[in-house]
Length: 295
Ligand SMILES: [Zn+2]
Image (cartoon, rainbow, N blue to C red; front, side, top):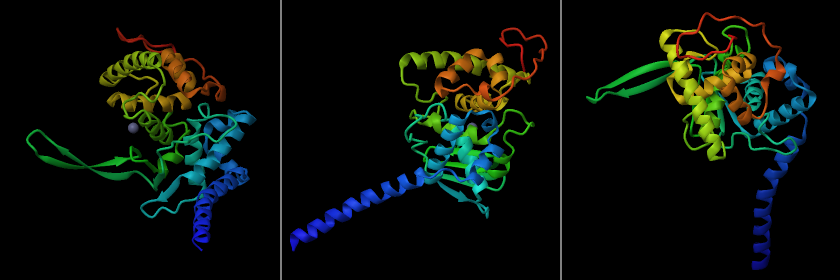
């Protein structure tokens, strides 16, 4: 009798382990439904320029992302497939070059939930000054990335990505760049790079361009990178990631060393998906700042 109970227990443990694996395998073996592929074509601007292998790989990653991550509609938002697939497609774009071609790669392993608000959301902020005075502020946000495995997005702003105005902005790429950044253990503008030599070169190039962006922001000078990136090294990495994927020709012409570091990190060249824009000559550069010839 004891043997029978033990055998049944062992079987239950084995099934509890095997059934989720089998369900995952079955779900990921199915191709992405045509209606969802159409969403990728519509809402991931880079999709139009991809070759068939890249399109297949992105679709497979989206399928995996949708299976693994929980989506939650907030403030009464009823989530649709269009929202889920758009967010998954743009988030997986950052991993398209980094993930292995023929096996299921880890997609943001620390992330478990994507919360979606209909529009910009309000977040209470508490600031304490040196005298101990607490100021409560409420700030409008388009997106936020948390170290505890959550990303929060405004659907209204996700939808605007890839549209001509304002150029180069993409809130999904921005927040998921923060997720990649935090994989190194701290969100400080340097994701996991693997070797001391890579960190040295990354730090040298990004510190210099970060200082230049702070200069541009201080004097209100135009450039490729959004001045918001001047607020911290972490924001610089997120803003530069948006530009790398959304305005690759402009970024590579104006910030060639930065573009080179991102090519090594993302292992893909987004210039292949976009025609180069016509060159525009800039006003003479202010002293001490090195610019390319594009904007
Ligand atoms: Zn940010």
